[in-house]
Length: 142
Image (cartoon, rainbow, N blue to C red; front, side, top):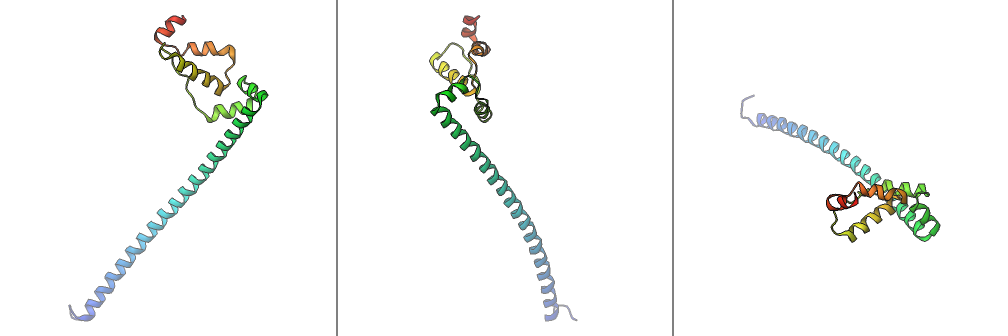
């Protein structure tokens, strides 16, 4: 067959078409794999969100129960309501604020909130706070 004939050009076009089809097939396979991975990631994220929602619902329910029951509120604040207190202390990460002698009212409010969240017993509060004083406040405490 002579080069440049119609049949030769047609055979060349068919070869090129097959190469393009094979490349498209590989691209589709890669795309399908990426789509599957995205779907798996989405499912994992959806499960994580559902777990977070359950934890938040439990936390809100615990909070409502504690706020509506003086006995429960007292138990939690005294560290006796272990289940509720464990939930609060595990789901909320709060650092003890440092006190340098400035903005005392704000600091007192924050430290009281900390003690309430973690149910810190009265007898441990002063010792705990002393480790978080700096500067003039620490010098005064000593």
